[in-house]
Image 1 (cartoon, one colour):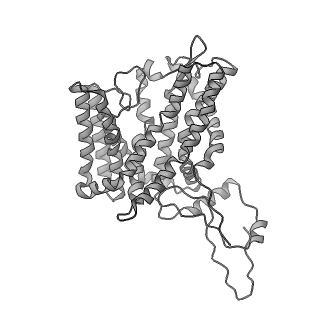
Image 2 (tube, one colour):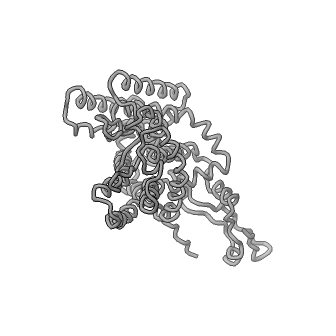
Image 3 (tube, rainbow, N blue to C red):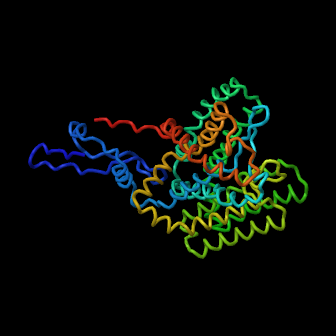
Length: 425
């Protein structure tokens, strides 16, 4: 950008501030800063849209005290959710030309370890507890604080819902049955449960912080105990199935609570992280091998028990192990985030995290349905996921899904965050 000329030889130039996009999170700057230059100079200076210029602007807009490892964990959690859904969801062409939803995990149980890598929800809640505790100050007005966080979380959701009203009508017009359309719409809407739980735990942040102040790290034993009691009621005492939905909040409160502990300076030692990883992994393995819990950490069509819907004690133990692993990776991630290009990618992913989360299923279905209508059955896209070769075929489609998601991201990312208002002169 061109330097401004002083009006008089004795005038002092305004001290410039670094320009750049806003970085999401509790420590983000309140507005986009611009160098103080006259309008004519600003108009003459072409904005640098080259990757190197963008990287420099993002680096300049990042506060030095920002914990970049937290943003990296969030970005990896998003990547895990997207790849997990794309790899374990099969939309199969039936004999009558309709589409049915299936999963390779149902016909190939040996693929369960894939769910151990790509089921990253506990990381989301860990980071959520961390950022909520960092962003909340005791004594501040609760409703304005909650409104800011809920607006940031829910702003892009109505646009997804509005887009799928005509999309569902178009699928019916194309000849798909109501059952097929319902199954596809369910794939789009099912991830929204996460927003409800995440929003509820965020709203409970003041109570969670009070629990932390009173009980410390041992407060995590409360929701773990509730989850264990619910599972005992469901599976051991043949209680009603609806009791399990208590764990939707109690189960995910565990990593959220550990995030609050992390924000308060605990869980910093390597010994603690190793203990969480080893203890959680051992508990999850014992529950799977000796208590009859499924090995898959995601729901499998046709399975009598799902570890995720609602979360079981095995899913909670697995989440504790994930928390330990995340804490172990924090320092290596922080060093990695010092690379400007790597940090720029992570920062951009966080700026559009909700857009990617909301639209990734739509991207997969746009390619799947579009190919079915225009070409017909294609391997890895419409075929039954009952052989290992299906995984190889599906991997070849992931770049195509990514291109479709990029197009949707470019279309809808502007709805996630409002444009900054121009400053009054």
